[in-house]
Length: 447
Image 1 (cartoon, rainbow, N blue to C red):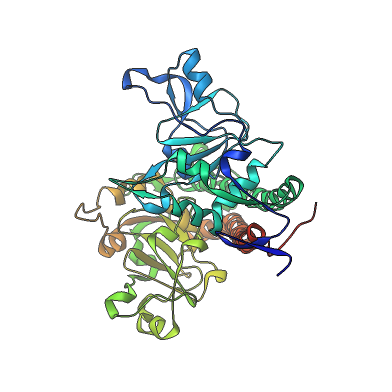
Image 2 (image 1 turned 135 degrees about the horizontal axis):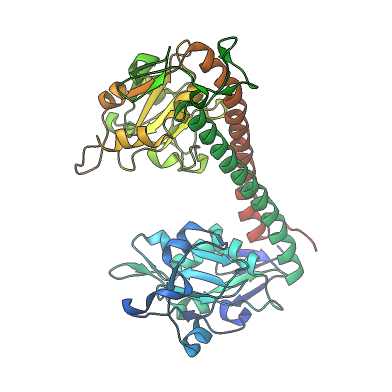
């Protein structure tokens, strides 16, 4: 006990400071700028709430703009190392969301629903504070100053008075360097996956939209050293989707799959979600980058999983959101299993004798297919797309030779993306396990 001291948040190491937030700032906390619409659309880039909720660390990104005079800009400028807090939110946990500003390529300001904090680099480390406010301790502290009016919100006055548990500056930097290194690895892997996704979509378009796959006309088969099929005079024929190569056909998605189904929410069976157990996929678990976010999974027990056996997921299933936010899709990897899903997610199980799962995954990315499905969405209380529409949706089915040749190109890309996603999950779990221990002093990194 002699190494610990009692504070409002519990025990912290005896050698740590426990100080008001305002005491480690270069300037008092400040609310952002408000100007009428006539000043919008030109001038200085302005951070809005969208950027706050999209980024934990704000990079150089496209933003809206606002015209400021010299005095306004001096009062509301944003520089590298500033922390920005969401002042209000429609959901309670959104108020107080913290973002660290990274190096910017041009001047920056912030709007009125945001609070700016400018830490004193001689007293504290900005990145450490970001991780502190992202931890359970930081979120607890923010909840203590949350005010419920029309919307949930915090004030700069209350935020400034929050007592923060802080080790010495050198230890703060050691901690933030460790956590930042994990974040950089995660970001690098995400960037790799974006690149892999672009390569896959480019290849698919070249082969199955432009029909310029490399083809050896002398031998009558695809060949990496061959000529581009269509522009080299490859024989085409009409179809309901336009011209396609001779020997190909247009079928229905249901023709090349063994199953198109969906799940059920456990609560409809009076079953409860669990703290851990079988992974349960929801629509929000599927990202815009066509991967599955493990941090947004729910969990069910084995008995519930068996009651919902119709929707037990298998490796290589393609999942597609059909309610709420429609059109997100991903392929189920082995690391996700065992897993199940609910009624907002369609399960598409390809018949591997007729089509590769990777081909279906790429097909979903094509603009024509996205337009086809989006035009058939039913706008009700919650937008939805029926399984029947999915099953009847047209799909170009290439010849066996072309399918196999494309598979040899695309499968390594999809597999690499899946491996990267598995690493992202491992690194994220490691970071999230370290964060509360580092912020409470249970785990120390001596400078």
